[in-house]
Image 1: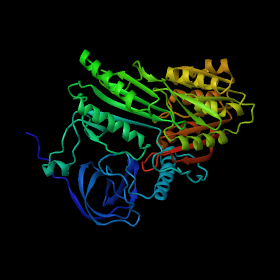
Image 2: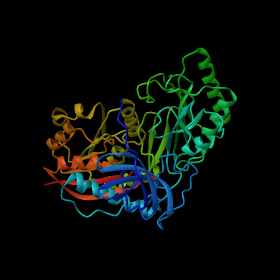
Image 3: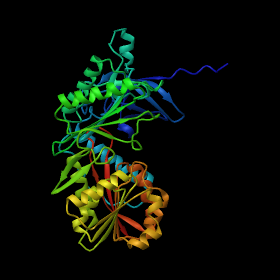
Image 4: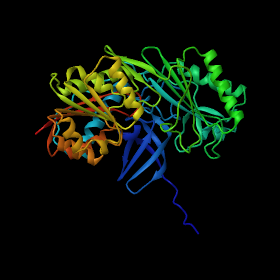
Length: 472
């Protein structure tokens, strides 16, 4: 027979003291570190522990005795349930303070390397409606909060379009409005939902693996083009007919959409990078602009989701690169070649490498449409392409710019960078923890000269960081 589990504790009248990773706050109670979402330093609360390990626990707020003077009033009705904007309760200047502190804590604690003084974090001028891309899930089961379930109310249909709720892969929190993107995304999402209700379209069931509507992706450019991609799970002729009916409805009633795309995804996951994307109406791409440059972005392309702050981030990157027009630059994890083309006119040549072939195709197009002829692009796994033979063929770079995914760089890539021995490395990261790990490996030959955090994602815990490394 299973052993009886000890009841999880309740802590009363505790004061939140700090901000932690993943958008949570924390308080230390004796030898226990307790992580708490949706609280801010200075809140005096009662906590219900939801998970407990030896030296740390996770808890939720049961009651506020006193709210902190730092606390801001959340502007979104979904705050506290939707996990997308966990820091709405924290004023923006405080968000910036804690993000910069998070960057330096990671570099010191994980990197353990000599650090210069950190430059002040560059905040976003827009703190709402700043995203150019958002993805919504569709499900036949609606997420209900504990309070909603206990109320016994009838909350209507279970079919929902919105965001995945934490801890429930098969349920969706229905979203009426999202303040991180232009209001047009609410019009499109809610219009598609209403059409689906009216025409009895089925929503995806993640357990049974059926249901027509699976997901939406919306991309809005600063050239006023809008891409809408719908993921279907089409398994019958009738479902194909229903999908085409929805697409035609969007074409006729939603003129904002300039690129209407769809994909049939019957896989076990929501990724569509390996699937064919079909263009129903308009173009199969949109363009975004930066300075005098235009960038083609397809449905599978990576582009920074905060367009205005992307310009700030890339400007810092170009400044740190210190280009004079004579340098050979390697741009690792180049995506659609945005950074490569952004710095190309200040370099002798730029060589970009990226895993996604479609993104590399767009990178080449981006050079062509901007009249840039000193770029070369290669598609493939970074650790396989970037090797000694590649460097001997193209030449040792003067500068390496690297902007890896959240997992950071593979150890083999770091070794090859050390072999390439550029004078400067500009490391752009969306995850200061993995960046710190990689900086420790590079420390054998490079010293950190500059650190510049950039906030791309107001009201979330995420932060970008740019580091300049100079050869010892």
